[in-house]
Amino acid sequence: MRHVLTSFLALHWAIVFALLALICIDGSRGVATALGVLGATIEDSRFIDLDKFVVVAPLATALLVVAVLFFWAFVETLINDATSQGVDSVARIAFICASGVLSLIVVGGVAQGINGLFMVVAVQLAALQASYVAMLAERRSAVAAVASGEGEVRAVAHGMAKAAAHNSLLSLISGRTGSNSGGDR
Image 1 (spheres, rainbow, N blue to C red):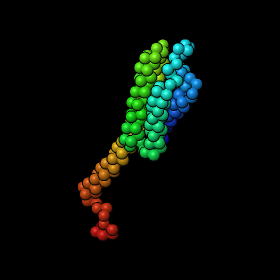
Image 2 (cartoon, rainbow, N blue to C red; image 1 turned 45 degrees about the vertical axis):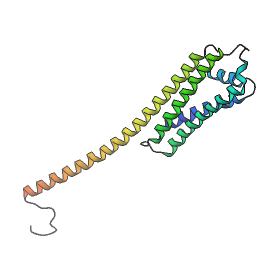
Image 3 (tube, one colour; image 1 turned 60 degrees about the horizontal axis):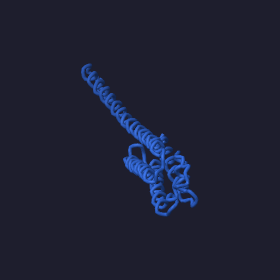
Image 4 (cartoon, one colour; image 1 turned 30 degrees about the vertical axis):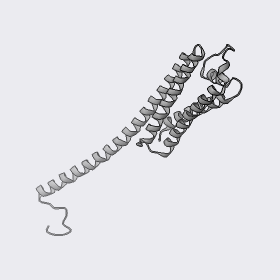
């Protein structure tokens, strides 16, 4: 199987961040709704600054960039084989950017006075980290399987060479040669 878990997780996170970006763009309480989707409850109507272009545009752009990076990692899993480094590097960049965006959401939320955002983002960061570890584990197991397959081929070739040398030595000791085609006997 080729990167089943990796492709699923990359597509999942691409969809999650793309949907968050689309929700952010919504004109009526878009950022507040996106934070609500993450799990933060915003009950107070004093957060008027969340709907301004200065807040919405950079946040939606950052979320969309992360979604594109995860989609790129998904495409890399479909194109490349298990031993390719392309999937690992793109996934690493996507996870670093996603962690950065979520960290900026915490900083911006604290600046706006939103309570309870730290725990919500901590849970999302833990989910991102678990996904990254699962992707690394799948990649390493695929590389180990390919390496053990090469090791098995070497072991079989070594065994065949050893058996041929043993048979040749036995035929020399016994005085029988197997290479004659009808000759001296």
